Image (cartoon, rainbow, N blue to C red):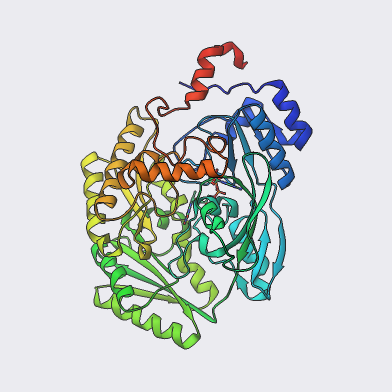
Length: 486
Ligand SMILES: Cc1cc2nc3c(=O)[nH]c(=O)nc-3n(C[C@H](O)[C@H](O)[C@H](O)COP(=O)(O)OP(=O)(O)OC[C@H]3O[C@@H](n4cnc5c(N)ncnc54)[C@H](O)[C@@H]3O)c2cc1C
């Protein structure tokens, strides 16, 4: 069944057009359908999409939506992998992609003030001439927005921590349309850490309209190593062994055979066709220190059976070694028409056993899996290959995904490492949190005055009547009949 868009009331559209400009209010079905997706397999149509240019316009849109009793979902680039930007209860989508200015760079205080629609990588490009960069660098860094990063509190950044460690302050639009600042330009302000609460809240507490990010100095030397192993087990043993040596690499990534096959076809990275797994390891610091660490990493990998080691010193050599990893998720499209990416986290030492479990579960269900992940953080991303056009395939893949999430939790891990809970994982929350835990978390929404105004249907387990689709959309369709949507 195809979900039909709810026709937004004319009064709502007129009010939004007056506040934001006619051109930046989308309500035609062919425009809305573009905002039905993110990078997951979930779908949900908004009633109207607005593209504001300032915090004041965001605040106006929030107030208008509230007057009309409509929920609001913030959206960045739509690269999210937990269904977070999908308006599962329809309503108004506020896409912040036009708010993409870098407002201030302060090299002395090593910070920048940016709008939420700025692309992650553009921050590092803008401050490169000062020898600075913004550390959290997701594989999607050429596309995803800093607002989306703040909402999800990804990406894992082994040596430097996640987004919350790099955000000093936030300007936020609250549910009643007020513009407030949390945190500021100085570190550790007194009082509750409300900036920390907002980071990772997945758009459920407020809409972020400005971000003060912390910048780091580029290290004197960075060295990238690519270690090729015959077996996945050898590579995953090497992950713990490297960190066991007291080395905390800036990155420690792993790809398995299926991923290498796809990458090889896409970017010709030069991976041997019979290799079982590769590790990509980056060490940095003062030159002597980085070289010493690279030597130690080489020793560990050789000891654990690496059959080949490649080393990159110059930016060009390093970029070549990274090319395969950075293009891996896109390349997986060569293996199957659809894939379902999972995001679990386990204690590093459990990686070998959990990975074996992942292959076993996928084999048993008859689906091919490709693993590419932030191994140093114990952050797994099994990608299940399937064809969503085959009846029942999506349901089977979701069941399989649930089994893999269980493996992670049973190993002492969790249901998400960096992609957030969103819509997709909300029903797994009760595996790791009690009803009381969840009630305390939900009371934060009340404290922020957000209730169900922002991004309803996310993070918290569904109740009996919410179901899997958009309950609001369905009930309105049933009430009004299909003729209402022409
Ligand atoms: C190929 C690929 C590789 C990826 N690699 C990584 C990776 O290595 N690490 C990683 O962590 N993630 C990765 N991701 C996932 C994704 O890029 C991140 O989760 C990213 O932070 C999402 O940003 P976005 O701008 O696309 O947000 P969207 O998908 O648009 O939104 C994500 C969430 O943020 C909320 N949101 C967006 N903007 C705001 C705002 N201004 N205020 C409040 N809430 C807001 C939305 O409501 C939603 O809940 C990858 C995705 C793809 C497709």
